[in-house]
Amino acid sequence: MTFSQRLLPDFYRRLHDHLRSRLDAAGLDAIVVDDWRDVAYLTGFFHHPNERPAAVWLGRDRCVLLVPELEREHAMAQGSVVDDLVAFDEYPGLASPFETLARAVPVGGRWGHTPSLATGRLHEFGTVFGGVSWEMTGIVDDLRLIKEPEEIELHRRAAELGDVMLRAGVELVTDAVADGELPTEAELADDVIRAGSRWMYAEHSDVVVVPMLTGGLVYGGENSAYPHGLPSSYRLRPGDTFILSLGGAVGGRYAESERTFFLGEPTREQIDYFLADHHAQQVGTQAIKPGARCNDVNRACLDIIRKAGYAANIRHRQGHGIGLNFHEPPWLEDGDTTVLRSGMVVSSEPGVYVPGHAGYRISDTVLVTDDGPERLTTYPRDLDDVVIDLP
Image (cartoon, rainbow, N blue to C red; front, top):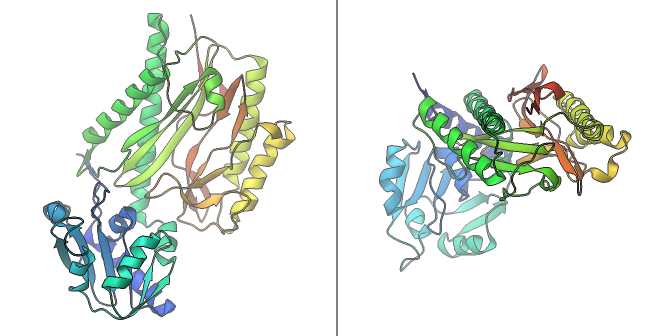
């Protein structure tokens, strides 16, 4: 039996009730969102974002979804949970697409918009929705911070996807060692992405397709010292350190699973860098618990690397939130004082980067629970588990 990625209507109805409570508390009569992730979050309508807008208007007793006419059947087939679905003919059109929405909702009062709304779009709203007083609000962003149980199950599945891709990458490299020709970064990336897609469609029904359904970063040798280096034609070599940073989305919810590997027995230098990062990741992950502040968690994690003597080799924060996007709030960084709460999902991924040598990074997708951190990604991370033997 395959696992359905579609959330049931009850999830969206509860979400709408939560959002209406926030609107009441903020003194707002309605809210409009147009970011494709927010649209999907509130209605279950996932689509390929392009120049044609989609938007959700949610008021005190109705939720209305605006889509391009060419997406109407798509939205209906997905079972989008709204009270009304309205469509505009084409973009840019002889009139603003949002005039269709304005004819479908009671216009007036105080409406909220998300911080991500473009200034040009807000100006357009002002010309279409007469008599509305606009206020920027983060109430949708705040709701997205805490995952409902149904979302957590999707994150668990996405974490499994990341681990599946890691295993596929290790298998390819191990087989290549036996065959005598190691893969390039690009070949390895291609293989793990296809392995992830195969698993996705074999194990799930109603697959929710989003940008970067499966993907990640693959880099070896000196290239691994660049935290966000893209796969190249570099061919792995015996003795290399290499990183697989992989993941994707199930039901639109992401997870990442990332490990540092060694091609052959590592040197003392490689071991020292790896163990410093491994220790930091362990300490940082254990600090992810309700009531902890993001900046304090980040500091506890990265201080391990500093105490090991590698302060100059830190290139980024400990981690970030994960949800309908690979990277989203909260941020495990010195500048974020957000208090962690049960139901948040974050990455724990400190790194040590040595130019001209290699990079070392271990990442897990971590769920904040009342009992502390739960690693959703389970691929082994200890030194003995990440050494690929050479003949």
